[in-house]
Image (cartoon, rainbow, N blue to C red; front, side, top):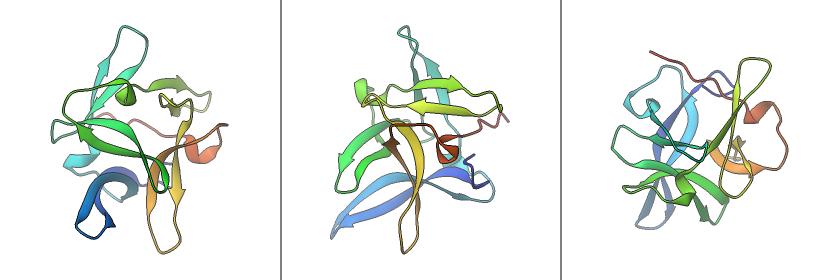
Length: 131
C-alpha cells in the first residue's frame, strides 16, 4: 500500500501505438490479484517480488525514467530490491540503480511506481499488508 492509501497493482500502460507494458500504479481501493506479491529472499540481502502472473518485478528504463514492471520470467539484476524498514513501520525499496521506489503522479492521471528518488520522502514509503 502506498502513502496515498491505495494498493499497488498492475495496470496496462500504452507507451506507443501498439506497445503496451505492464506497469504498476498505486490506484486500487481494495487489493486484487495483481496486488499480491510472493517475496523471495536472495543471499545478497535483496528480495525478488514475483507477481500473480509468475513474472518478477523489475526496473525498466523507458521514456519516463525507471518504471517498475512485471516483465521478467527469469529474474536478473534489475529485479533485485533492497528493503529498508522505517521507524514509522513503513518500508522503502531501493532498486539496482540506487534509486528508491516512489509513487510518481503524471498530469492526466496515473500514480506510477518508479525507481526515481535519490532521497527518501513520504511518497517512497510503502506498507506490506499481509493477508
